[in-house]
Every structure is written in structure tokens, then in C-alpha cells.
Length: 68
View 1 (cartoon, rainbow, N blue to C red):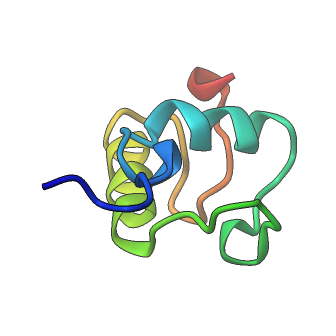
View 2: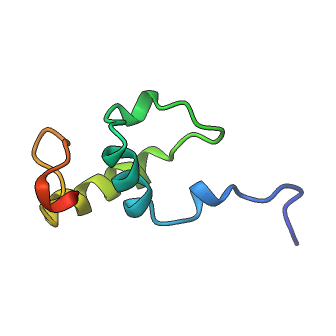
């Protein structure tokens, strides 16, 4: 049975690319970022961990040269 409303894309997709773009635009405070649909906390944390592992973000969550 289908749900009466669909789940927003932002809650169904990998956020690595989205967060990398937000960081590149200078949006570093993701929890207070005002979006139509809030970024899911666990998916955001996972994406930040992936970007850190790939050396795209430093230990403070800021964009490194590789992430640019």
C-alpha cells in the first residue's frame, strides 16, 4: 500500500554530494541550514564522515583543498 505522501528526495538520497556543494558555497552550519525539508541527522553525519574519510573535510568539518 502506498503512503498518502511521498518521502522527500532529501530524505531518500545520499547526501555526500549535497553537503559537499553546501560546504563549497560556504554553508558550514548544516544543523541550522534553513531548507524546505530538514536534512536527516543520521544521513548528514554519515555524509560528513565519508567526506572526512576522503580528506574533503578537515577535523573541524571545513572544506579542504581536495574537497574544492
